[in-house]
Image 1 (cartoon, rainbow, N blue to C red):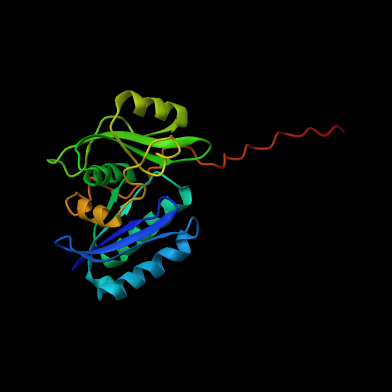
Image 2 (image 1 turned 90 degrees about the horizontal axis):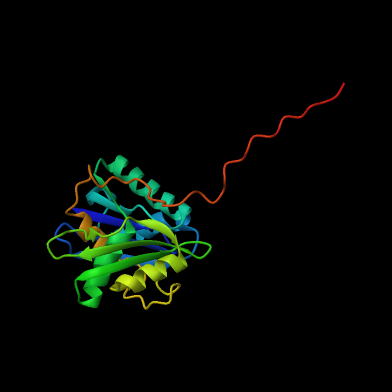
Length: 223
C-alpha cells in the first residue's frame, strides 16, 4: 500500500507517492504558475508509473488546505477528496504553514521559533509563527495563521526573531531557509495525523478576490 501527498496551493504543483514506512517511491514538483487543474492528474499518473504502483494501492491521501491561490487550493482539495471518495480511503488536510515550519527546522538544523510566510497579493502575506519541538508531529502554533500587510509581518518577525521560511520571506527582505513545500514531508507528517481531526477543508485566510455583486438599485419610471 502507499500514501499519496498533494500540494497545489502556490505556483508549484507537487505530489509524492510514499511507501507505508515513509520511503519515497516517486515525487515531483513543477513550478507552473497556473494550470494546476490540467497538470495535477497527469502528474499523479506519471508518478504511479515511476513508482510501479496504481490508484488501487493508495491507502491514504494528504493534501494542503492553504493558504495561497484560491484556485490552486480548490484544485488540490477537489482532486484529493474525489480520489479519496472513489478509493474509499481517508483524506487528511494539512495547512501548508506548519509543514513549511517543520521543513525549515530540518533544513536549518535547529529547533525553536520558526516563521512560515506565504506570499499573498497586494503586498500582503500569510503568516504564522511556530515552536518546532521534536516531540510533536506538527509544530506548536505561537500565533494564529493570518493574512497580514507586509510591513506588519516584517516588524513582527524582526521583533521576535527565528528562522523564516516560505515564498513570502524574500518579499519581506528575509532569507528563506526553504521556499517551497516538500510533498514528501507532507506525506510523512500526515501518516501520523487523524483524518477525523485534520479534515480537508480550505484555509483561505482572506476574502475572495471578487466581491459579491450588489443588487441593482430600484428604478422609478415616471408615468
